[in-house]
Image (tube, rainbow, N blue to C red; front, top):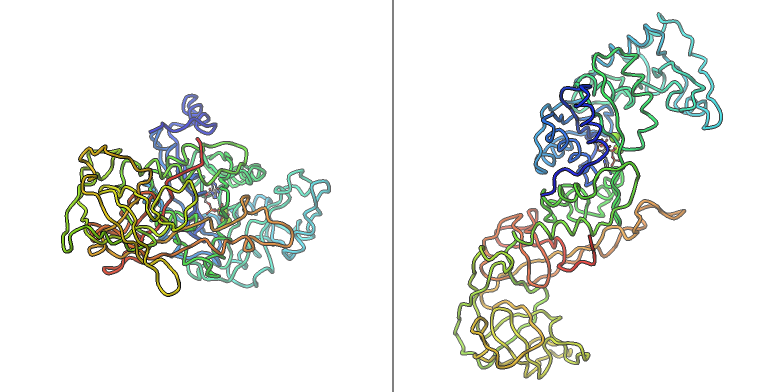
Length: 551
Ligand code: ATP
Ligand code: MG
Ligand code: MG
């Protein structure tokens, strides 16, 4: 395993520890519980937890739950589960909403210092008077209310005397600041909504820019890591810490968001895919959510190795989704047992094999990891092969089964196709072949060579199984950069899921949800935890075997 990759944030931490600026580091992962975590969050989780682990620091899991309308306990539960599954243990588990009283008191302090005021402009008026990059903003007519009046109005906002949107609390900074975030930003808004944690106790809620620095300071966070779009908010972050007279001073550092090809990542869009039933839930195996990746068959090890490889930089970039696939192949290569599964079965009768006879053949469980041993698979007169592995009129480069041709059955014998049986519509429904007992696998037969090796499952003992095959959910490579007049929904792939019914080896009867296998020639598969029952096996293809991706 590679050590934590060196990155600019890690260098800052090393420097801060060396200079004595901090004794120990404290980081936090601060999701808003308004959706499930995705692979982009995994980048932030790995960064925060691995940094603290490396330097014997601490990491809190803090729910940034300051927006009652979009948040839900279901998301809190799912987020905790996903962070744990990735293999991380938080030190403190906190809710921003637990600090509401303290935040309120700090807002009162700002008012008393003349640094905040209650403003009656509507959200639209506030936006319209903010100015632009080149034009300064306009001062609010309520900007010079007295401290007494502000204290009274703010208290009455809390008591619920005003309707949503009627009043806000704003910082009194500088309407001409070149940084728009410093032009009297809103600190509190009114929202008569029930909060998942505080119920109806509050009807005013702090804005992110006010709440986040206070949360960090209250928890003693030393390095507050967020994505690049908050870079311009940093002066405000520092202003809040200073003017609210927080004892502890956290520092904010920004890093690039993860973007993946053919993937939408924002929770808002992912929620829309769920709500409008493009997928069967947040954990649909096509989703880039942690729970979707888990159900697809990704492992925490693969996700963490991927995050380590992409590293942490300060410029936004688009990472090829194939790179993620590379890491699951790497992780499963030595771990996953090999097996054979026929996805689209075609019956083969071996006419010279004795009727009623079944023999057991030895098959290596993982040729790349011989310690995994050998399994036994039955062979008899009737087997299934893959429909694709037969062609009646093959092109010249086709080396699999066709009339008159001989192929090797993996772990078994050579068979030769003698006869093609069709139904009344002309569809091939059965092949009649002969086998050569001399060619038994493992006996060292060298008499003649065949060019094709195909997989199979013995018919009588075969276990029926469903296979779910996936393609990217979003067709647009640079998902999110939609053409004019289109939304990301126009790029949803209508063929992202194919379901086929086939057979697996009899020793697969007792597999459990999340068991992972490499099916010969088909790729890596995970036993689906949602659809698999005691009488139905469902496999999700995690990834096919071949990759065009080069590290
Ligand atoms: P989204 O837009 O997907 O809802 P968010 O940033 O609003 O994302 P939060 O729940 O606020 O979601 O995120 C928690 C943490 O995860 C934040 O520190 C955020 O910066 C980080 N994060 C979110 N998305 C990504 C991403 N794509 N890459 C890296 N970090 C991310
Ligand atoms: Mg956020
Ligand atoms: Mg968000």
